[in-house]
Length: 348
Image (cartoon, rainbow, N blue to C red; front, side):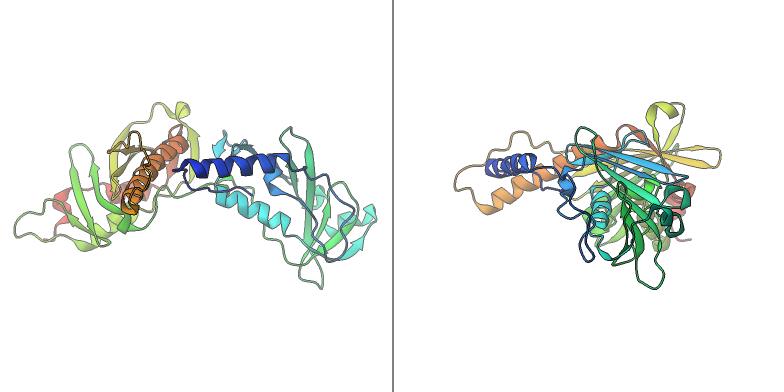
């Protein structure tokens, strides 16, 4: 499956990973096996590492993915990056399908079992690096009297009952992406600021809570409103994805900046059009690591510091690579909660 590998710091790690890549590349691709026997896996001996394309179709919907490097993109949604975690979940579902018993080998029975596309089946096709179909899995109706679904390989007529109910395979592209921009753990952040014309306010984040950065003498902040702003800032969820060039005329007039304790800062800008709200995002690392050299017998605390520098910098680079081409639609309530002034964050 797709691996979320840690960032490489030491050269020896890179050598090991390179060797692993060569090993996987030389492994024979899955060419199919004899028809599955009751109790066996439908895709027995299948290696998900060899999947370079995925197509999910039904009579009404279709979604398609293509692998680039160690990640997939959603080709039916502008090539937007898919979440490695979500793609692993999908491939895991397919490779774990076990047959309990054989139901029929007669094609004329397929319709009543729902294992034809016209009768509501979901078909998942897997392709190799040159777009040759490796396998097709047809998922039909829930079986009667047994805890599973009717399933078959697309190029075979034999239908089986799966050992377990197969989770619903979604056609919504948003179910395959990382919907949240940020980690929701406030302890990872040190500050947030919001600016609109002409208002501006900043909140220091301490022990999971927020304190206005410039609280007037004798004034008390509205802790409930501060908490609402902090929660909202860390809960930005994507509803829809658009290419930047398709929304060039948007006016982004509200800016949120979040600073992490590793000194990475995230700038999120909001725009409104009618009753819809849009967002774009970028990251910046304020302490460039430059060239990091690992010395022989270097103390562990020094190695840890250099590692954290590299990780923080590379997270910012990765964030921009993922988000730089896109504008997101979000719920308008995010912007409405952020739109306020410092005076309105004080208790009367």
